[in-house]
Length: 385
Length: 58
Image (cartoon, rainbow over all chains, first blue to last red; front, side, top):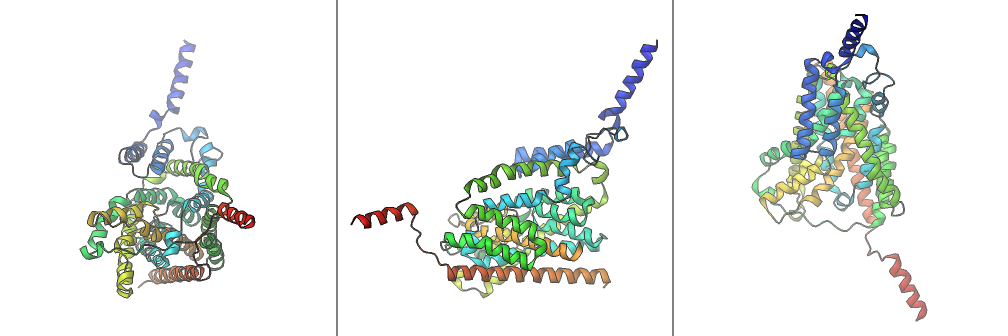
């Protein structure tokens, strides 16, 4: 009889430790959101390299368990494996390493060949500051508003880096919002590109860019680093690593390092970043009214960034000679979703003129957007940290 | 207009001006690179060494 009672007690204890016993409606909702991410990544191929780790991370982070038992499995339990991996996000180690990889895979030739395109990358940052003002109006504290505003830069690592410094408690919502909208760039941008351009503007053919010498390509990251370090020191972690990665690529003598930076290193960090950011969205911290507000502001910031990029090109065209005019369809590429935003310029341009290839031209503002959003993050950090 | 909004507008204004100044300087930097390091047809090292060998033989 005693054995039977003991067995029943053990079974009851075991049951109290299971996910079925501890599950709440919030866990189920978050698990469904994670499954949607995985579904979108596999069936629609929306940023699968990011959405699969994030989606799976959401599943991991929302497996219900008995938190009082101190099992050390949760991402917020000090000393757990996921907590240790999450330190790369919290302390801001992962984003600069991602930037190292981005630098090692980015060709700045399009920008060097047509430097006026760099100004489009600046104009698109209105999305960040527009969202910052909106977030303040919606009741967020200034540091929180800064973290939310950076979603408009369309740059996941930058958003994570800045939020980890300014408002770590919003990290999950900001990161998920930034990456979701980056994945949805092909859905969000085209309607506004059509709305803000005329049929004549959409078929503007841009001049073939000049050839860029290897010496220019080598000097660009060195001079870029020095300028960043002196002008915006707070952007050094991101831009320093970006230019370092680019020098590894362009120097021609560090091929192995460049290949590691743009291959295995960036892949490893992407896996860790995606998984831990996903796992950080535990229902108790994520399913709040603030998260919904952050998602709404994030969408607005993407729209503002897209529109200001396009409108700025139209403004530039007023001052440019006939042969030098820029197709406004590259204006959307001022956000730093590389190379998705540039690809959208290309596909939208081809819809109106099948012989007008805009990809090369759109890559200029696109890489300028990476620099621009990192500078904006540095400025925000300088004011609000 | 509240003090918070005023400060937000100030930060946004300074931020955007800062970004444009930074990008404008980058623009000038690229122009300078083009001016002082213009593109020349770059001969691969192998061809150079072959040419020099041929010259020496001649």
